Image: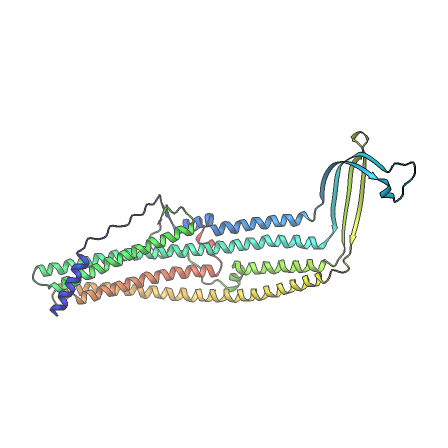
Length: 444
């Protein structure tokens, strides 16, 4: 027994007798304090994924403008000046005696306008409607990206709050361990306690300080991740403006129905929009069998020079009837039908996944609520255990092994409470995401 005590004291002296390593100082710029809502709004403004989704919407709008231009008349202005020399013998195939072999050279000037416009072309019309649906698809995709971005920021912010709570809890445990160490040292000084009690309390104190260092590192790491999601300057230090309370997140109505979730979730709306576009493309492939009617014309001032120019023009109408396309139309129709069947299967899969996520989120929220109640009761009981064990140790009824065990129980209860509160708020965020209400609840 004496040998074991000597070894413990030697290890304690070697571990705690050294000077602490100097802290690593990281140069940071300004400090940015953010509430949860501020963080969400900032992410929606400057997160790279959100910006890219917005650019995709703008690109879809330009695609629609290009498709619409094919339905409108096209005008082209042209001006030319040409010098011609013609071989009459080669052009006619005969040579007439007394006539020169060539004509020219002579100048030829022309300036005018060409026009072409579709009159009846259902294929172009279907493609234009499909491009308009493409804008809606891009907007739904942007909404999905915004929802995912909000979910990531909320989860990271809640994780940072959990890390901050761990730091506070670690500090509280360090204070408690320091008080117990002082108590053991005073008892030993007064001849009531023993050296092993003081050593044991000192070991427990150093362990709590070590946990505090780990907790602070976890908080810093979590804040770095939050800054990256917000796409802020890496030299800017992020701080949490909300208090370390896990009941500040918006409340979600658990009576949300599956129909509401199916209506709001952008994943399902995107698949439905893609189905609509695929049906329009199938109709466009079918309409390719119909005749196409176009009109065109040409008007210009034409002459050997500007003084002899006179107006000339040409007007024409053209009807194109597809007779044989080498199976292209049939292949395009088959491809469109396959695409629609694929999207139908995706729709069913997305519906099932959304239903599972909603039901799971509701069940997890109820479970997390019960965990919070149990954890709150556990922390109260653990605190009472610490108080009673300290009183027994002070009275000399027992040594401080009982106190150390009570400390460990209190630390576990504290960790359980923090974890339960975090899971409860994360479950509320997951439920909001499952019904497509992340931005509506957290950004406004």
